[in-house]
Structures are given as structure tokens and as C-alpha cells.
Image (cartoon, rainbow, N blue to C red):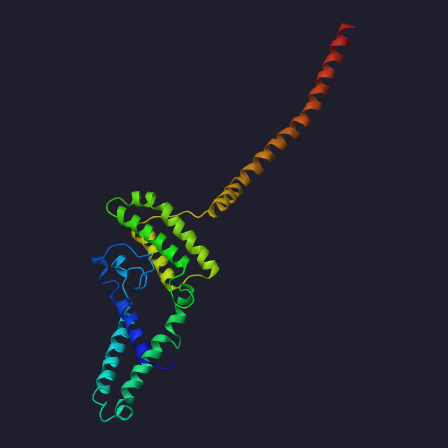
Length: 260
């Protein structure tokens, strides 16, 4: 894919956000906007904890791309008059294009992020599903913020309903294919806060039948041996009973013989 100034700027911006997300985590509130304003509605990356650091690979790409973009721009300015852009700047542009190709993997960032799933036709506004998800996400993060100080047991208890609803909403959007990378990243970060930072858990409903079946299988040998024992005792009684009856009859006959 050819490198344009727009694509280069977009790539630099994405890498910059990736790099600074963790360094500003302590300076912002835990909230997002769900209103269809002029600015894009997005989850504040600084809302998440500082330990969600950018990888060394991403940092190195940011540093390398920045260096080569600056070198390319520095070449363009003096080559404007007389125009010697092609003669003087092909090396800087080639290095920048190579770095950009490594970052983009020959895929457009917008397409790869599935942004069309979150935007109405004509790029007029976010979809209703996206706005609703951001609203529920905002409620969940607000609950986290309210109870994050002190004992996290209260957070797990009081935010369970909001977090469960957010999970169910995300699962539905995932099945319907109506989510973009903003929604996916927001859900992943929220799940990490819930499980790793706050040590909360949310038992899945499908585990109930599994536990029931496992319990039945566990007690099945006990039931088998108990039924076998009772069955053998019943047979033993049936075998003993005729012997006792015969002995009793013989005793009666002996008594009669003595009397006679």
C-alpha cells in the first residue's frame, strides 16, 4: 500500500497513543463519553492502570518511525525550490516507507480496526449499538472508580451486575459482528481490571451443569457399591430362609414323635 502523508501521520498517531497510554494512567478519571459529539467517542486510555505498559517492540517502532519521518520532512523543505524532491529524498522516503510497511503489514488501519462496524453509513455518527456499549462501559468503569479504594470485596459485589451486563452485551455484539477495535479494546481492558487488578470473578452459567454432572459421576461408584451390597444381602436372606424353615419343621416332627 503506498505511503501518503495522511497514512504516515495516522500511523505515527496510533503508535504515539500506544506508547503514552501507560505513562499518563494516574492523571485521568475512569470514564468515557457516550454522546455523539464532534470529537470521536473513545475510551480514555489513561483510565487504565500503569502496569498495562506498551511493548518494547512497539516503542522501538515508534522511535524508528519518528526518526525516519523527521528525516523525510527535513529533506522535503530544502528540496522545494528548486524542486529536487525525487533526486534528493528518495532514500529518506524509501526508509520511511519500509518502516511504514512493517507497521501496517500492508493493511489499512481503518479496515483492520473494523471501524465501519461502529460508524453509520456516510460517517455521520457512531451506531446506536456502539453508543449503548460505551454507555454501559462508562457505568461499569464508574462503579470501579467508586469502590476501587479499600476492600475490593465491595467492588466485586456491587459492580458484579454492571460487569455481567457489559460482558453479555459484548458477547452479543461479537456474535453479530457489530463491534470495532474500540469496543474490543475497551472490553479487554475492563476484563483485566476486573480479574487481575481487583481479583474479582464471575462464575459462568454453563459451569452449573458441569458441576452437577461431575457431582453425579463422583457419587456414582458409591451408589453402585451400596446397591450391590443391598442386593447381595437380600439374596443372602433368601438363601437362609428355606434352611430355617426346614429346621423348624424337623423340630416340630421330633416333638410329635416324643409325645406319641
